[in-house]
Length: 285
Image 1 (cartoon, helix red, strand yellow):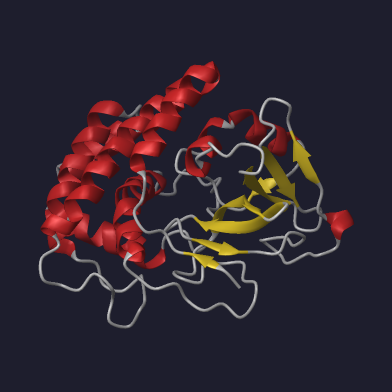
Image 2 (cartoon, rainbow, N blue to C red; image 1 turned 60 degrees about the vertical axis):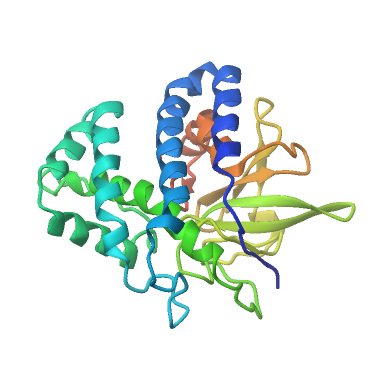
């Protein structure tokens, strides 16, 4: 079983792809413009990490990605990130960033540690109870966006795990998959799942639901829109979940994380047909 370990994350490719798709799809311009600001901040943080990491080993001693965070390298950059979101994000996200920015650093540390330990392991359940804490999803967004380059930096230093079988969760950190990616393999394509937390990819069977394990082909319809010929909705009629798949055999210039953000109409289509995404991307598109 193949596990693709990222060496150095190409944030410049993400930024360039966001620019291209923003010009190509006017309905995604606002989303991609906001994402570009986040990605630029992530790029700067990612490139700073080797300089500010210190003498601590990058790879956790027990090989567990979700081991303790190196908080000394996180808190000052997190303040900068909150300032960016406060100035660039739509309300109420900007309001939440401002509120959190006014808290003490131990509050920041607790929020980051909680997400690092538990985030993206379970699907988000939307509550109908208006009395519930509406700030929680906003806090999770802030932690998720900020910690992504940190997670990618740590996993880039780790050796890939040995996989004996197909697994539905990231073998590195036990997170849910964000995407499927079809990569060129011989005369066809090999399917991988991409982790929503650390962005690593692992090989996954072509005919298999990544949510419930359904393997009957007639229960796993695939849908493609003319507007996005390289993006597939891989659905399951057993559990009514779907995974978005970026087909690099059809568009080798696609950047999966970014192309996924731009495919907004596919989310509307899936909802209208009763399918729920296993896990939403960072911006919920």
